[in-house]
Structure formats: structure tokens, C-alpha cells
Length: 266
Image (cartoon, rainbow, N blue to C red):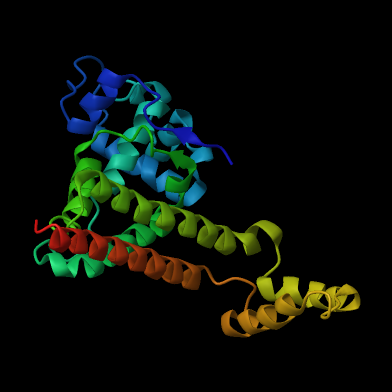
């Protein structure tokens, strides 16, 4: 799978596009294009066909314009991808995130943020093809999301570095779980075989070679999980289970910080 790296375009042009400070074209015909329209079209193509398919030529075909007309608005794909990533983070959240307020309500806020991110990855699977963690697009919508995520844990006893680490930890779990979920969803289309068909083909073969006495724990746990999930793996369960354990760990960290304050009379 091709990976695109944010931050690989021209920094000045990218920043101007992200913050809407670029100058409009002053030469040539006016085909009715705008950066907003081009970016929205690019998101449509990437949603439907994947990021690898997206090119300036493919985008021009989708818009019904000449390829060169796009370059009066955008330098190229590198800058376009940065703006696409920032743009999808301004969409209304399908899972409302409770407003920051009572510090004791940090857990439902973080859970809502995680579910909103999970939903965004499933709306825009191409986001998983963009490496944006170490060099994120410095646009208004990603910064607004980061600020909102931090405010979810503001005032609960963590220092600034711990707040950043908590937000990153939750985001990393969601991204990994979403990647596995989308892999599972795409498997039938890519292989031409459903999970049930795969199991029906492989189960009789496994029975011939599998010795339960050699693998007693797997022989017990595997069937139990299979019955519960009706599959070898349940992406939704993995996402929820992992998130709950992460939140439990954050809760333990918060308690330890509160105990430190009590112990030292802070």
C-alpha cells in the first residue's frame, strides 16, 4: 500500500492553502474552480478509489477540467493531501464530544473522541494511507482538534507532557484498530471469499493436523472466541476492549497524581 507523507510539499504554499491566505489566480480563464471545490473533489475520489488512484490528472477528470487548470490553485498532490487531511477534520462529528467542563467527566470525553476518530477513519479510509503523525498538517482544523482533545483532560491532575501523551495514546489505539477493521472489511472484496467461506474451506484441513493436547490453551480459547465473534476476529470488540483498558490505565495515572498531591499537601 502506497503511503503519502504530509509535510512533503512546499511549506509556504501549503501553509497559505491551509489557512486560506493564498492569492486567487489572476491570469487565464475562470472555470469556476476554487481550492475548496478541488479539495472536496479530491476527497470524493480518495473515498471512492483510494489515495493511490488520486492524481492531478484523475482529479481533473473528476472535475471535468483540464489538468493544467488545477495548477493555478494547487502546486501538486503533496500540498493537496495536506489540505485534504485538515479539511476532513472540520466535518461535524457523528459522535458528539461532550464539552470540557467537569474534570471528573474526562473519561466519557476521551471515549467520545475515540469513537469520533474511529468513525472518521471509516468514512475516509485513505487517511490510513497518510503518515501524518510526526509532520502533521499545521492547519486550523487539525489544531482545533488537538486543542479540543487536550481540553478533554485539562484540570485532571496531569502535567502538560502527560496530557499530550494521553491524547497520543488514545489516537494511536484508534488508528491501529481502525486499520485492522478496514483490512477485515476489504478482505472479501480483495480475496473474493467471505470469512465464512474461508473458514469452511480451512476448518476441515485444520482438523486433520491439529492436536488439542499439543495446544490445549488455543484449543479452548479459540473456539470460545469464534463462537462469541462468529469469526476469528471482531474489529469492533477489539477497538472497544482496547479503549476500555487504555482508559483504565489513564484512570490509574490520574489517581496516582491525585494521591501525590494529597501526600505532599499540594
